[in-house]
Length: 358
Image 1 (tube, one colour):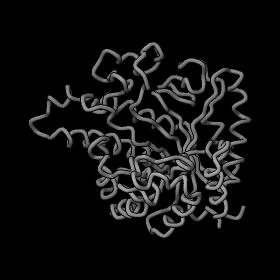
Image 2 (tube, rainbow, N blue to C red; image 1 turned 135 degrees about the horizontal axis):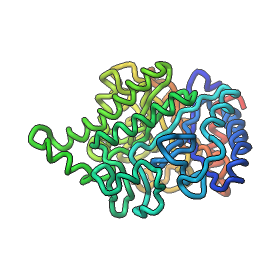
Image 3 (tube, rainbow, N blue to C red; image 1 turned 180 degrees about the vertical axis):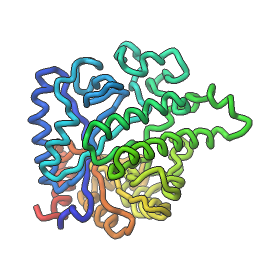
């Protein structure tokens, strides 16, 4: 059975570094797209802005240290552009995957390029250095919201992407916005304030994308635990799935087995499906990376990914029966080719392939 009637997708992060490796990246991209086509995927979520930087030619963000030796070095190959051109030839869609607030995974400011928009804000309320977590933009700052929206507008204006997606990295810390909140604390609760700030960003991105090209899709891949979205990330997923003007699709990270004690896959999938009251489409994000490993978060079900090698296949089959669900996404691409001695992972991949006419 072909995935053309049920969207199959995967996540890709790109690593290059030196100028020589940047040249070689074209060959690697071509090989990736060939592999993706053979796996019957028809969409790729490509990480284009991991740390307030870019793997594409940008006038707003510096080149990413994931593809050059040092953030801000010359990007000799426009990686996003080459991905798009290569994928289009195989009828594969490219969605630009953005991390909106993360600047760095550590607190070493010397790694931040002087032409990074975060650099000029390091001593302001727009950027927060959070001990043991990293450096982040302040989600409550209007200047930050404008920056993120402008970054999205740049991509959809200059590149023929099929969509934009953001994941669950929203509020990174409980103290990041307290200075701003103090100005309005008498009129709104802290939780509602944070939800409103993320909502403002999401609705503004949606509006600006549609103003530029109404065909481009916008979606979010939130935490699979609905409560966590309200208690930790301040992502108002219920509103987005009820009111228009926020997202076109939602892709919850359902990284749970069928026997997960707290979040069994079928129950959690149905909970997400039941939240949809508008025309938003559901895509399920699945965790191939768990295959062959102990999942301690699953408690009594922690050995499920060791004792079985057909979980992903069964999860896709279950999702196909939901009217709101249009596809699945597997995290992530490299696990299909880097299974070493992991026989469970190899079994999962073979069973996945058996879903289709390989």
